[in-house]
Amino acid sequence: MPIVTVIVAARDVAGWLGHCLTSIARQRLPPGWRSQIVLGIDACTATLAVASGLRLPGLTVQYFPKHVGPYVIFNSIACAIVSDVLVRFDADDVMLDGYLESQLTQLDSISKPMITQTWSIYIDEHYRTVAAPLANGTSTPGNGRRAGPSDGQILMTRGVWERLGSFRPWWFHADTEFMQRAIWCGVPRKTIPQFLYLRRVHPNSLTQSRATGYQSGPRSFYAKQITQAVRRYALGTRPEFVWPAIAVCLPVGQTK
Image (cartoon, rainbow, N blue to C red; front, side, top):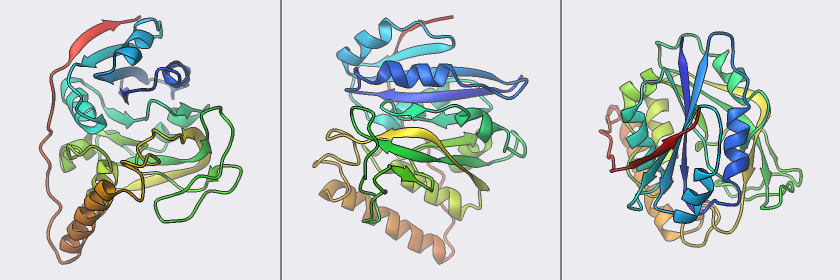
């Protein structure tokens, strides 16, 4: 029976974590599939307190005592589990009905590298649709609907991980770098043209905060590295295999 694992890195999301994880646990799967959810808490005791009170099927919680960022958490969990398909999903977002099922049914083969994504609807802290700024300088319409994929939310077969290696251990923007390596390695990608998750924007989100948002200096630094890499790939350099940077974590418990 093939397994799909949703990996969620969480920090400072105590108010939204329960809705996020519940939306994942309620997902329908194609016949014959089994799912599991692994939550990695990034040195945040408030988030840990919320997670400790949740009772959801298939949920495992890992606590990272040192703040390491979402990509090191994903790497650490992905290296420690057995799963045919890996899903990266943000802890302040919400899956809508069909998010997993629609993507899993599009996989040509779980043994071959492939990435799938969906469209999204941007919401604020109170679940209201919003016009949200995007990385390319444009914004979503007032209804929040983005008819295109976002680099941060992806479903991939294990073969993608084995071909590309891991996310770089950056504090943010490593999802875009990962996707560029996938594109230049020729990994097949499919986008489901449906709005299948709610993407939350708020002042502390990585794409919106002053410290890490689209116009911030650190993000511009990472973007420059991505641009330089793409230029190398365009000239014939093969994208790098990135060995995973991982961190120590402590098991919190597992619910059945």
